[in-house]
Amino acid sequence: MKFELMSLPYTLTALEPYLSSETLSYHYGKHHAGYVNKLNALIEGTEFIDKSLEDIVKNANGAIFNNAAQVFNHDFYWHGLSPVPTNISLNLSEQLTQDFGSLELFKEKFLTIASGFFGSGWVWLIVTQDKHLVIETTSNADTPIRHGQIPLLVCDVWEHAYYIDYRNGRPDYLENWWKLINWEFVSENFVGIKNS
Ligand code: MN3
Image (tube, rainbow, N blue to C red; front, side, top):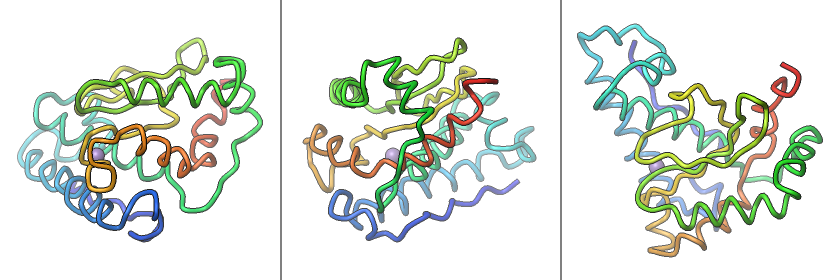
């Protein structure tokens, strides 16, 4: 199977002023596209050639895992952003309040963890096996689905996600990234989990 770079669900300028078209050109058009191209080259002639992206992420190692997981993580990241305001579902809002005290406290905790995360990686909201919501970080390409966890939301804290717009100001990136979260996507990921 040849993988294709996902289509962005908005234009390159749509996330301005919080994320510039230059950032999207590089982050989506170069970094994300690069992972897709490398993955396609690496799976040539291997057992993974006819596997789904999720199968590869769950079972491959080394460079094939790294590139497949980075494709999955970036697909998830872009789908989790929206240029227009979106609404959180009542279900998700209630669960976040139960697990973090309030939506404001959830935001505070998420951004504090993301600010303090050392190195390149990702900050996630995931659902645990006992159906609680927790914030987790993964380094480099690592991803919750590798560990049987269900992700709802992700923030990319690799420097390439923000360096053009914010230089070393990761906290400013995070505050503005928060304004772009597609709560409909996050809520859809949570549908059915509570009662499953
Ligand atoms: Mn990235």
